Image (cartoon, rainbow, N blue to C red):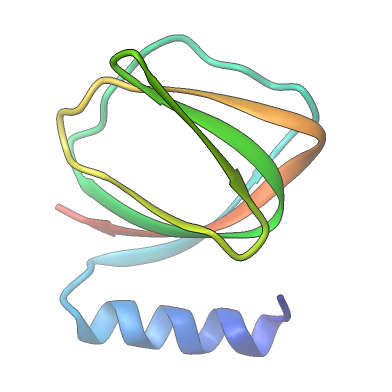
Length: 92
């Protein structure tokens, strides 16, 4: 996914009412503890892969996949051997 696509994604999400749109880069094999956020997130994986755990459900995302995590939902993440980059739109 190239930077022009990010700009299109960003403008679309801002027009949908999201407050900010970020590029998030994650190191290879990084994993975090369960946590939650005070905002809703809609994101697109632009590079790499990762596993999102919500409750007992683990979902594997790859380049081109999209996902959502609602504010206050406890979740954890684990990234692949190449790490990952995703474009995250946040709504407070």
